[in-house]
Image (cartoon, rainbow, N blue to C red):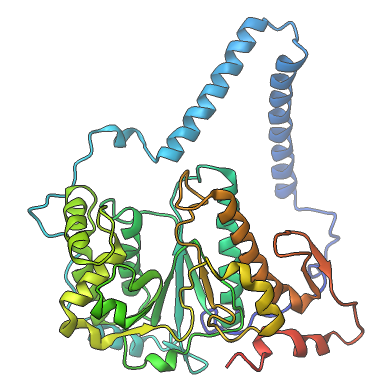
Length: 441
């Protein structure tokens, strides 16, 4: 990337690795030759060990078969035990009885900070090499993540990878930095709430970033051309998809969606996080807070407190304190519920074009209720996976178009060539590179 913190356009590199001058490429320094030989010996020994294990189990070598079988069983059991420990997230120190945060105390995300705007402004003055504006645009950090443990099934890990690839593509195209988290920074704030301590830590650790953009792992960019109109929010500190009538008139628990939202790096955001977090600690605090939220938010089922309901409750009950700095966005799909969208992609391709970001060509498709990484969900897993495949390929086609390819179908991982090579490749760059799209602005 360029010198401005990764925001300049990515350079294309053609051809292979540069040749090394002054020394034949086949001759290595003696130290490297010895190191390479040692590695080869280790690999050979390991392969021999694996081969012996396989032979013991398949052709029954006379190497005390009963002992070999017992050893194989032990290896299998040990492997399964390790996998089980990884999936459960438990180490030896975790096997003690869990203590929950006391409901008689008020939970905090950390030490109270009251002068962040002044401190950050001074830091930016002292560090001009880390500007908050790059090419005239505010620096944005897209933040996403997944649990630290493997998914309950392999297909879940596969779709997490696709989700990451999708976000990396969008960020590369639009000069946005990306942060992927797999760590629980606060054991009390697990599940829905894990994003809060992470966002706070990133705000404080990256003063050069103007906006933190949180995006759930089950949300995909499906308009690779559309850009968030950040200048529209110059007087606001939180941008979130939702509907004001549902929020203030009906007090609905689905008035907003916290699967994709933007936080400005400022004191106001830290204060909101401090006010938002106390319902989050797992155990009795979260359970009692869930009862309060269900009693006060229309349509909310009876379950423990979640971050989305808590934010809605906070904005409704303390409207005068917060709402002037909150932009409830619905002119485009910062969050687009997947049902009703994924089955219309062919219609969108026929009638519209990328760059619209709304119901005609949704900016973000969010698979709320689908849990490909878990063992349960609100929708049949086959339906969710097929729909996620369609959304990924719908977006990926917009990326592959520059290179002359597209998927054979919206449910196919295979691609096909859509145009031939040319002696004038720069003409295709000017025509098909999303960064040059006239609809981008």
